[in-house]
Image 1 (cartoon, helix red, strand yellow):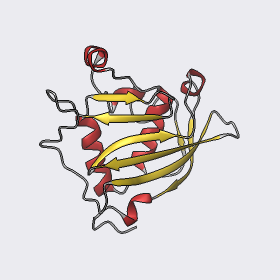
Image 2: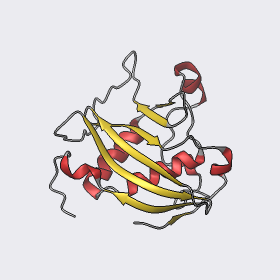
Image 3: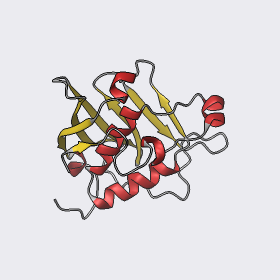
Image 4: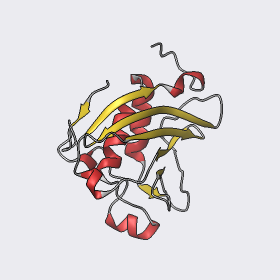
Length: 167
């Protein structure tokens, strides 16, 4: 699926429409963030590179999450489903079947705004759930206004996710 991703969010009217990660009140109460448009586009590109069986589970998990927290250096976003006092309550949500606890699912390289500097992103699962997307650098407002083009992807899930998927 390597190719261009429109700056208006591609298939979705609003870049943040696919996964919302809570609302203004829950973000304020729990210290959450709304993803930057460029972060959302990179997340969508990474998820779209997964095979259907894994992508469906990851997408369901991301839709169930109601909290996203940006790490202090701005180079990673962690995802949670906060229910009561539990910050990773996955009751009723399909989990990934993995051989080890910490698994990179997909690594992507993207071009933002036609620059020669590429941004690298890694989507990782921890404890059988998608947990984090990390970036090679913090993204900015300037990145949000620019088109994102997928340059390369590496299917990192193959050696650690148990599935019947063949590619």
